[in-house]
Amino acid sequence: MRERQYNQNCPIAVGLDVLGERWTLLILRELLGGARRYSDLRAELPGIATNLLAERLRELEDTGVVSRVELPAPASRTVYQLTDRGWQLIPPILRSVAMFGLDRLPVPDDTAAVSPLNGFLAGILMVFDSGRAGNLAATYEVRVDGRLFRFAVSDGHLAEGRGEPQVTITASAADLVVWRRSPDPKTRSAVASRILIEGNQRAVARFCTLFALPNPSDVPTCTG
Image (cartoon, rainbow, N blue to C red; front, side, top):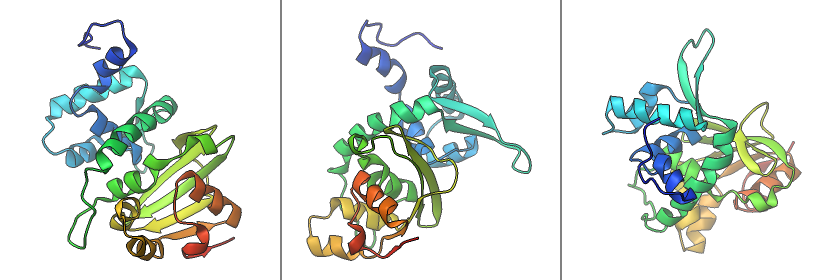
């Protein structure tokens, strides 16, 4: 790993030696959406040089927050994903940055393009309330504009999704962002009615509490 940039005996400086580099947080943002191929990362990060992306990934692997995994046949491809350590450490950091930036984003209208990943992060993952999670262990599945995201809550923090989901959510990226950003109660009520949450009634209620989503009684909900 390259020499530290700040050379200060300070945890903030030491953390910024890795996370403060250009593109690093955006690479981690992409990996919060699930395992990604190198080509996927290149496509979603226009402007990053190939050698720079490779360097950033090596640094994150060396730090222990990202791992490179060889998928078995028939996929037979190399992907990058967050490690368990990465799932514990990175979401709170990105959440703080996202909360700082969210108020500076315009509320999307009918012409605004919101990517599925941004809808997932801004609308769900970044508002996770770890203080309410307790000892919950549950996997969730979120479909945003056709893209599937899986993740879990384990021992009070976010984690990689494993096993069958207890709750599934279907929504558009724009609706998820509007739910977070619009000051108009009527607009929020309209988008809430289009967010579909499915699962056991108790699991749905817990999920909506953890992720500050509309009360289950206000959205179409299928209980099992």
